[in-house]
Length: 312
Image (cartoon, rainbow, N blue to C red; front, top):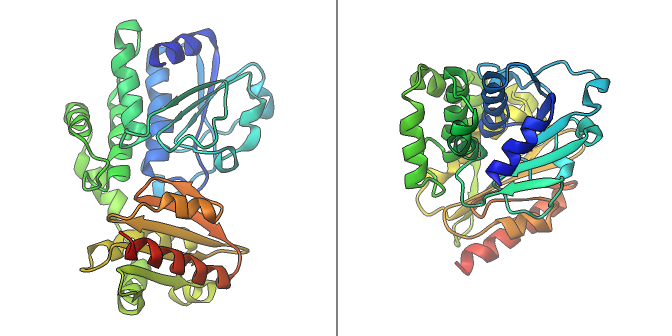
């Protein structure tokens, strides 16, 4: 499949790379790392990255301003996005040919060509693997591409702590840091926290609830976020904070936005992605997300999570 993707890339003069809404470092790392890889390898092609900018990831990359007519006859590559509803910038569908590159369960097999590897720690890891497969056929790595890919791997593995981290992940990371960039700068930028967010984290640690089963949860309403001067996006930085607490098997953050409640699920054992699917979501076995629209449904999510932990 990697060879087929490279062959398809060689056919097009314009390539536009997309990723999912509310991006994380892997979304940026895979999307922008691939773009930098292709720019270096094919200097005569027009390569763009599409989507809204994310202020917390400005240290990684800035999105391009793309006109509608640029999609005409273009190859579109969508990175790190499990389903079409989550693709940032729906103009992707106006391209000539669509390639999906992802590591989530392939519940929505969109696109004309698909490369899905659920065993990969991140799509950034897959992009580096794509480079390795194609370097004898013209692919060239750069310091900037390596920085972006490395940052994406770090983000989706939780600094190599998550179970998705494999020997291959460490091998690729060790090869990437041979390029000229500062891993320390990446860590500092990726994990720095505003004082307001740190204060909210104190509230979370003091006010989360936990069932006897090991299911933990916290609800962050719009009013609470306003009280702490924290956005819903910033609050999502804290999702991992309950994972270090003794006795917690799985946990959920409810983060209220304008007209919906984001459900952030994490686990240290019980498989949670089927639970996420029940509530308009999905994801990985140990890290998933969903969406609900009323607080009564939050109680149902907690009940379901409690059941999973009881039976784990």
